[in-house]
Image (cartoon, rainbow, N blue to C red):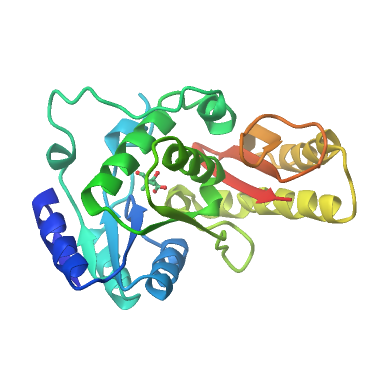
Length: 280
Ligand code: PAF
């Protein structure tokens, strides 16, 4: 596996692959990789001739007071995982390589889509995500890009951005990967102490409860959300940011479980904000 730290190096390598007629997949990440990321790389390897992963903690998607400085980092470990899973090139730029000091251009969806769910408490988050993903698309120019369903709103927003800006890139959504006890894998799980790690199970328990209610035919989205909230509220270490049912494509709130519905949540366990969801 090769490592590139400059945009020029990435373009040179991808250019060579293109000359050979090879297809390229991109797995954008912020590093501190786990099996969720590994599953994205596996999927990319199975669908593309060459795979590029980016490891970049993107400052423009963190708001004031969020965990930009403390976000966990371990590039050596990330490289070992990426190589083991068949990644061909890892792009690990400095912030200055990605953003000029006077950079002033952003990519932002101006509908309500980024204002729902996580956008309510993270108002600049999706503008930062769209901007960096758009830059990565321009740098790598992949055929396909791979994102996890755990960040369901992010995935929907990227699909919308790709549609609106006519990127010729196929977006591949990949399923949530969970620990054996149900907790969705996340780089932020590392913030949890032992007691919080146990308490965090309340997220997946709520997801499984909601899924079961929907499977059993409950059509009232409000009833599903209320039952999930009640379960979470019974956990003393948990504080709900939101539990909501929205249209899985537009992110508009829905009252009925009709069409494709995303039931998503963000919950603080102690100081750590975790997300989880299901789609029906
Ligand atoms: O999902 C993430 O890790 C990030 O939001 C992404 C897509 C790599 C952009 O920084």
